[in-house]
Length: 202
Image (cartoon, rainbow, N blue to C red; front, side, top):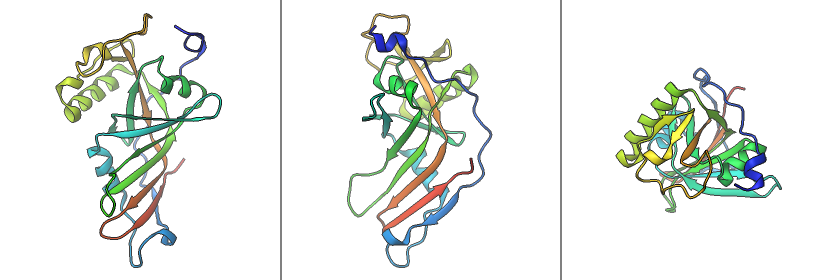
């Protein structure tokens, strides 16, 4: 284990909040087709529920951005992702919990891209983790079954994950983070070009 892994402190665990009110929805007409309308938030939620790959942006302690693809599950008004305690993502979150998660399509002229901004909060409540483990398996299949132990996913129990290579007490552990949106953006390309912003109450 290197010094950065030994010295960093995990973000403070918090319990999930109650469902948020509907966000304020605005269409940016500067970047939308004439006659376009704002994308409803429920349509964005459907995309978040169905998308399989997300891109997580975090900030390194020296201020440089870090981007990586990962799996994520939408549940209880928030996106959830998992990462090992010694991975770059977790080290970045220890210093700065603000993140951006992005998903969509790489084809021009179709689809809806979603950019979600928020603060990552670690989930340690084991009933909540078991519910999220079930959601992971439902969405991604039995290869992504996680057991729950010590307030985290046991990544060694998921056959789709590589075996741990680090020799530490946290080897084979995946911390789960919850990201309720503070602001989100939707970039639609069919049948019109649209740019929608959703702002959530603090």
